[in-house]
Structure formats: structure tokens, C-alpha cells
Amino acid sequence: MTAQPRRNADADWDAWPVEQYLAENYRILHPSDAAVIAAHSTLYQRIEPGSLHRTVELGAGPNLYPLLLAAAASRHIDAVEPGAAGVAYLRRALTDGPEPSWQPFYAECRRLNPALPATMRQALSAVHVHRAPLTAPPAAPYDLASMHFVAESVTAEEDEFRSLCASYVAAVRPGGYLVAAFMAGMPTYRLGDGSVWPGLPVSAELLREVFEPLVEDLEIVAIGRDSTLPAYGDDGMLVLHARRR
Image (cartoon, rainbow, N blue to C red; front, side, top):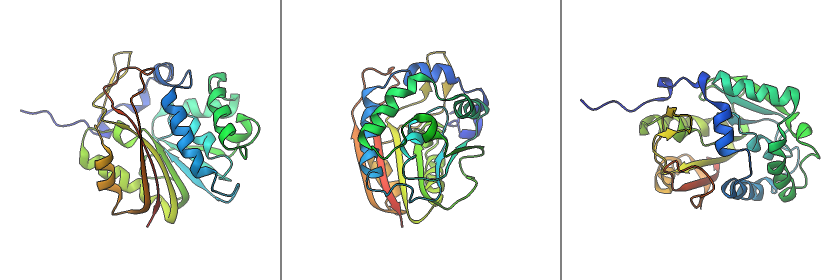
């Protein structure tokens, strides 16, 4: 009998190995993340500072740079994270300040968008952490919804991936901004500590199929495989910008 694909609910996200994940992905600024920051900065530069009343980061986890990117445009940022480990990390970052390893990320964000606050602490002062399912942000619809390496990294089932993407779009008001990044072609997610997590290999073609009926002004930019990252079996990253119909 063929095993059923692992779904989001099949993984213990409370036990997500935050330190391992950070060590593999975010202790230095990798070229691929610099490329994501550059792509998103072109969008955020066009948004008047402080003009977005409330925005959301879905599946925020321990990745701080999407929250930092939004800090000039948004007066209130909801960081939605379902897992206890990710929530604990985010709350420590807000209470104690972000780890110094995030400084190069923020320096690059601010170089590309000087409207950002002078310090990371100031940037994160707009962030409010919520432990909640990806599909239940606390104050939808938002002016902007952001999602980074989430929908394709929490399920191995395409129908659930499509549903999570539809929920992401539904989190913003009509005309609201959508900002996202996906791992391209990544199979089941295996971290260096031996833990195995659901994953779905996605392509630009699949993203267009999923998002085109729901959005307008869709842009998808491919970022090549980053050899400085662990070999996750991916083909690189896909950056998405759009506005909800």
C-alpha cells in the first residue's frame, strides 16, 4: 500500500528545531536571501512609509528578515506562527532584541530602503506575535500579506498546498499586496539533525496555476540554486508579488 503524503497536521511543529534551522540557513546572509531582500525591496520602496495600517507574516517562524522588510510600510505587523518553538524565538527577539547575526540582513534591507528605522529593535517594535493556525490570522483582511518558505514546506500534498495559498490570498483585502517566497522543486525537507519534515516540490508553473485565478499584477522571479546553503534537493527560490483581485 502506498503511504499517504504527510500533511501539515502530521508534523510536530512545536518541536521544530529552531537552532538547527537557523544554523543551516540564517547565521550568515546567503546570496539567495540577499536576492529575495533585493526583489522585495523594489516593492516596498514603492509603498509610502506608514501607509499600511496592518500587515501579516504567515508562518513567521524564526525568520526575521521578512518582518524587518515590512517595518517602513506597515504601522502594525502581525507575526502568525502555529508552532511553540517558533513563537518562543519570536518573543525572545522582541523582548531581548534580535541576535547580532541578523544585523547584516537588516543592513541590506536598509541599504535598499532607507525609509526603514535606524535599528532592528525599532523595526521590530511594530511586530505582534500570535500563536495561531496559518489559516486563521487574527485581523484579516490585511493591507499586505507576506509568506516565506511556508506553504510548500509544511505539506507534501498538493491539494493542501493549494488550499494554504488560497487562504494566504484571502488574508488581504481586495487590492491588497501579496509578498512571498517559495523553495523551488524541494522534496521532503531534511535538516542536518536528522529530522524530516513535509515538503512539496513546486515550480513557477504551479504557482501561476494556483495564483492567477485569484490575483492581478502577478510577478514571479526565479533565484538560482544557492551553493552556500545545504543540499536540500531544491532548484533555488521563487519570489512572488501580486495584488488580490
